[in-house]
Amino acid sequence: MLQSGFQFSDPSAPLFMVYGEEIPIFLAIGAVLAAVEVFLACKDDWRLGLIPAGAFFVWAAVKCVVRVVRWGPEIGDLFFALRMENIPTAVFLAAYAVCWIWRWRRSARQADKSRSLDKTRIRDL
Image 1 (tube, helix red, strand yellow):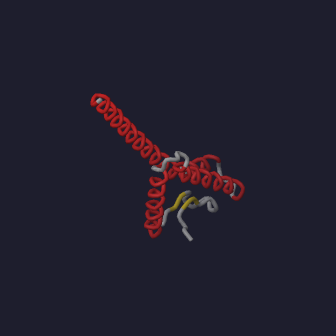
Image 2 (tube, rainbow, N blue to C red; image 1 turned 120 degrees about the vertical axis):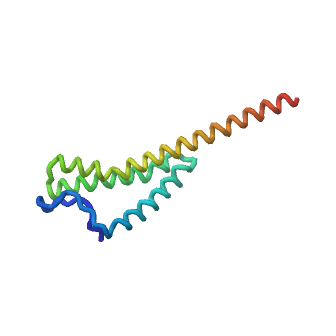
Image 3 (cartoon, rainbow, N blue to C red; image 1 turned 60 degrees about the vertical axis):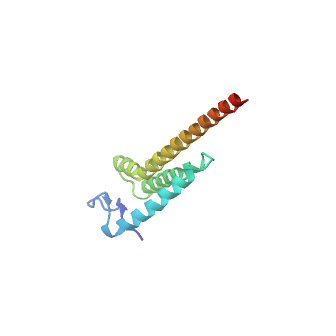
């Protein structure tokens, strides 16, 4: 089990700890999730790309509620944890926006080519 993350149980311990041996695991999981996000964001249905971001947001919110019930941390620490755990959500939303803009520009270029072909066909008549 991964040990990195927020530590609320011991007030003398640092709030957030990352163990070096777990970094490759985080990087591999992040690469796979980024590939899934790009794949879903490039689909025709616009809602599919929002699934990973929504899932991470809900997961972070649930974890914060559990922290409040279980440990009762200070509200400042809780907001800090919520912001830090929503970094993947922000990254997924940024990747979704880039893919959406790329798809929109591609479709605009295709529409422009189609219009120019239609003009050529009209002149040929």
